Image (cartoon, rainbow, N blue to C red; front, top):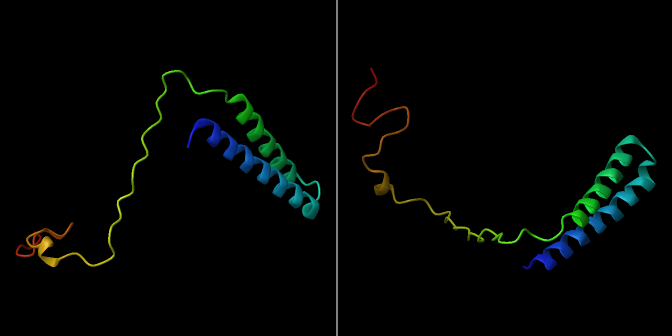
Length: 95
């Protein structure tokens, strides 16, 4: 996703959040919590406008792929001879 698409997606999300907070205002009235939400959403929109373009030479971090770990149990032989944390090796006793 490019910069313009990312900014458009954030602008759309802020707009949706603004509409949701306006709906809350109808239900809760002009309370302190609602006024703070309205102010926070307005600040998000202002910050997005002030963000500007990325700095020249800035390279975004590569998107790392998630490694899927299967849910099946591990092979017990993988743990053969391993020490249990805090208990030590199975053939020794604590002092």
